[in-house]
Image (cartoon, rainbow, N blue to C red; front, side):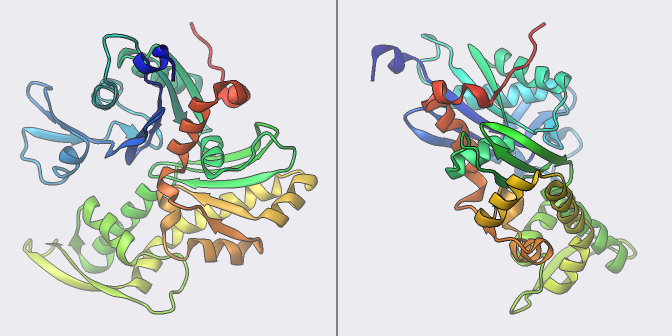
Length: 342
């Protein structure tokens, strides 16, 4: 390791709607925190960032707001995103005064030029020397260990908090991709809506997320489960507990899951026949936190008649991919997105 490497920390960031993960070259994944910032409404002062801020969601008094600055995989609130990024970068970069880091950031494949510029600018204001962008499904594929530079095609489905990306990758490029802004967050929202409509019970998004992780599914389970859900009765106005089964939550998630399945189907229809036969041999790889929904792989297997495999540690595939790119920039120049500088 050269002296230059010692004073320069290169960083890979998976800037997600739900969570942000940071990889430091030579150290691995050093940070995995919710993409949430809590601010004081009157002054705009940041009170907490990451886990501490997420704890406040749905619990804050009027003078504090917990904000998720990323919406559907892209920056919805520029200033807050910048604060989030600089806080995370500051936590992981040691010799900050010596040399600014090079940063590789993953972005949704359906991102616009304006959105790209917002990501680049906020990383630069947060202290990056150079910023490189990489499409999420490409980063996920590299993170999983797919040889993306080969002519043979691979299909990756990356389901995050804000977006589901389905991409066919060959020769260091994305041959076709579908990016829909329907993913983990929509699943949570549909559980909230279901409880409200069927039980007059109001639950928060954190409770919904917990239900999804515990008993949510996309396919009938061998053994159906149940759990008690606490919320506020909309009629009586008092707190109340309801027992809910995994079959009911599956019903609540139907529409969201159907839209993801439909997008996968469309992506397959658009795939050139040569690559389609590669996918038939290798199957589809699922990454991202949303891919961990029980039975989603089974549901996709049934719908596509293709082998569908969940990657190991699906939550970290994208950030591991940015890390591999950092460790070997020369090999991966083709996969980094050119974005116009003004």
